Image (cartoon, rainbow, N blue to C red):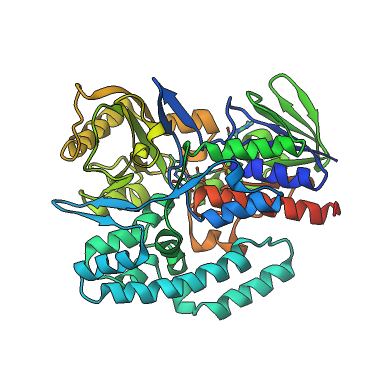
Length: 490
Ligand SMILES: Cc1cc2nc3c(=O)[nH]c(=O)nc-3n(C[C@H](O)[C@H](O)[C@H](O)COP(=O)(O)OP(=O)(O)OC[C@H]3O[C@@H](n4cnc5c(N)ncnc54)[C@H](O)[C@@H]3O)c2cc1C
């Protein structure tokens, strides 16, 4: 049995290793020169930048992938829990969120009487919901009508209907009235794909992920994760070809027979597409075998795109934490521009990453690595004018907290929607895949098997919308499980 995986993102590496462990002959074809897809790095003048993710979340779920394949994550890299977890800068003041849960309760209580106690209660509910959803719905394949129906009934029994139908913000309002605390509890939704005013309330399990499970950082930078996964793939016999862009899937009736890259043709009994799903559907497949029409794709809620600034800075950055949020502009206006008006924000919210605070190896000599991420509307038209405007505005606000000037910036680089399309064939230049909405959750999410092509499966962030890296890894495990079951390999 020959399987070809299109794309060496975390979803592709994950499924490849699981299939290889089950005895499948697996080849991964990756368009770029690196493994890890959206998880990659840039090292310039000895200074290391994480170009994609910087929040290492749900570490036990990641460790579980290593264990399932017979390895221990610690053999490959170390992770470090951040304390403080992050800092939030508001207009004229700031709050430092500790990495210790009891200290978080104290912080909430100090800002608003009663909020610490309410947060404690909220998080204990969250923890229960997280474990239930993770085991019963997230880590689950929906490959039969019976399963879908049974799980649908279960979820309705577990959550009250009103809770499923209410939104993230209305639940958070009951925990904290203070807008600063509300922002701490809601930022995860804003940065990961949906507005708190539309995201279903059960997604507040992200608060459990944030405060109880904690924010971690892998020493050596985020790329140590895909590099470790690729090493395991190779140990299990997977062949990985980088710089091998897939251009076409050739079918005989409703079954893929060959995968064509620019230079080579690969015979395949089975294909797992980890590349952006819209691209696979609309570009790699012949029209007859496409799952959706362009207008149906256009109607799918998709996560934001991003504008990223990378600066090598000669400053100690004392007023910034490892993660710092800049919520010092109008929160609702930013959300409206990303989720409703779909235009470049006038005065954006943004996030700053200073990895050398935890991992000195990210800096070199006296130059620190600083990464600024601005969430943008998916599909927004890229424009040099807007890039310059946002760059100037962001640096102006950053200068109030760090010594950032033409004298201290050693070098810089920017990336925006254009690069996301170019590097990843990303639909609407999205950063995080499909948005988290009720209609794309659990049994309602896109199937990880094609409805029209018999031997085509999917892995990656389009099959489980949510917290990026970890969900992509889980998606690979689920696809492999389904393939093994359906192709009677076990
Ligand atoms: C700026 C940014 C910040 C983020 N921050 C976080 C964070 O802090 N924490 C977190 O958990 N998540 C974060 N995420 C999300 C996370 O990175 C992604 O959800 C996850 O890495 C997606 O993995 P994937 O395998 O689904 O997709 P991808 O990583 O996109 O993998 C798909 C692969 O397919 C390849 N490909 C595309 N077309 C072809 C083709 N024609 N032929 C061959 N290969 C092809 C691509 O090159 C890519 O390697 C962030 C993402 C971005 C962009």
